[in-house]
Image 1 (tube, rainbow, N blue to C red):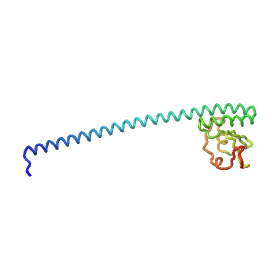
Image 2: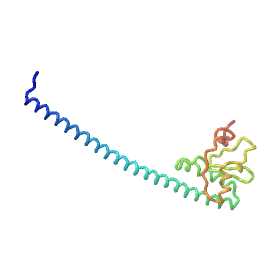
Image 3: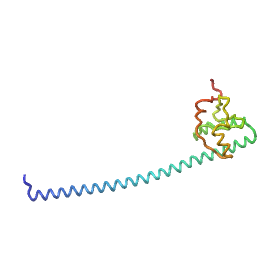
Image 4: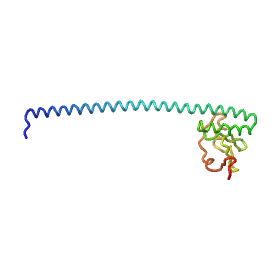
Amino acid sequence: MKIGLKGKMLLVIILLLVTSFGTVAIVGYSEMNRNILKLAETQLKTKAEYMVAKTGRYFSERETLLKDEARHLQQAVNEGSRQYLKSYLESVYPDLSEKYKIVDIYIGYPDGSADCGTGWVPDDPAWKSYERPWYVKAAESKGNIVYTGIEIHSIISGCRQKGSEG
C-alpha cells in the first residue's frame, strides 16, 4: 500500500497534533502536580500550627486547673485537715476525670500514706507514698506542678478500691 503526498502530509499533521497534545498534557500534569503539592504543604503546615496551638492550650488549661487545685489543697494542708483533703479529692475526682481525662489525683504524706481521688488503698503494707515517682518529683519541685507517667504497678496490683470485696 502506497501512501501519497496527501497521506504523508496528513500523517505528519496527525503526529504533530499528537505530540503537541502530549506535550501540553505532560506540562499541565506537571504544573497541576506542583500546585497540589504546594497546597498540601500549606494545609499540612497550617494543620500542624493549629495542633501545636491546641496542644499548648490543652496543657495551659490543665496547668491552670492544677494550680488552682494545688492552692486549695495547700490551704487545707496548712489547716491540718486530712479528712477534709481526702473527701475533697474524692468529690472533685469524677469531674476532673471526665472533663480533663486526669487518671487520678493524689496527696502523699511524709509517713508514707496517701489519699487519692479514686479512693484506692494499697494492699501492700510496705507501699510508701514517699517512694512513688509522683511524690519524689513533687517533693523536688518545691511547690511547682509536676507530671508523671502512669504507675503500672499501682494499676495492676498492690491496690484495691476502697469498700470493694477481696
